[in-house]
Image (cartoon, rainbow, N blue to C red; front, side, top):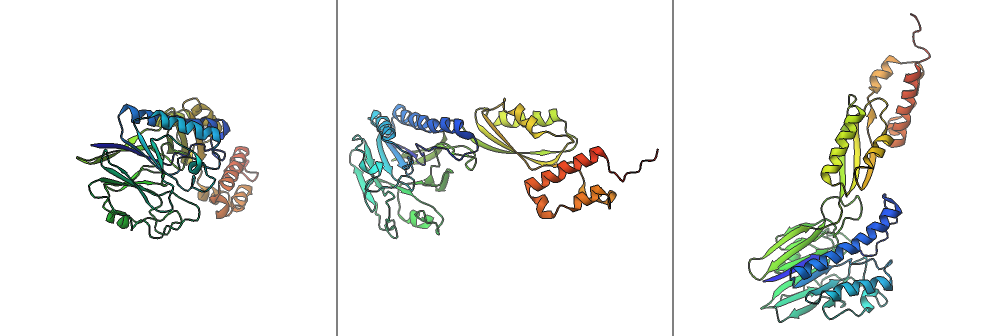
Length: 365
């Protein structure tokens, strides 16, 4: 029985400079990528894993320093009983001056550096590992279909690409991959873990990188050579969560906070959370106050307010036809109201006018 870990899209060295969670948490997140990778290597040692497959984008070439590559090399060399196989992706593609091309790793590390598919045969365990790295200006038109299994071996193929056939990122087609008859195909590039077939999978990123990558992240644990099995294992330090909370005009601030708190704490207090507010917010609802309360309940919280005050615009316009309130409503187009800024300006203005009362209102006792 051969046991392997399939991971990739780890992006060691990523700076997180344009994220919504700010530079301080960005620096901490950068270190968490390293810590998760170190934990996974330690897991491989503890579980006596035979092969450790890294399907591209292990690192960020533009941000990776000599100190970083030395750190990476030490992590890999410390796991003497584990054999690492690495292909480069579009974020760490090989070139004459790239870090992956020029660094001398320990003997338990193989980096695929050829301009076409290479095959590494491990005679002692009867495994053939096929792989190809991204290389600048490489022609990838037909190299996949020409790859052949090695008879008498368990065959694993490592690729970094996109299952969308029109993609510029090494377009892959499921039917072509299936036709190769590999025991397992370890894919990278798509950050969401998914199985295209029972034995063809994207491992996804080891850690989510931003709110565009919500949900569980981890690696695939595989076994071949008996009853083959391939299972996704959640492993990330933190997750990104997207929530929606629908408001109604009769909710109190306490009820809104209580509901929101339950949402974030049930999902994970140490995670990243973004709450989308929809529906109709009660009078004098204060988003800033809600944020200040929730900020104490989890590692990171963001609130996007798409709710509208509990006001029926059509009814309000009908009642105030011709006065300043009606004219104010009519001054906003549908396009204005469709934007966050326009909608907020409309309702803040209405709230002020309604609080002050219409100047044309009936003043009789």
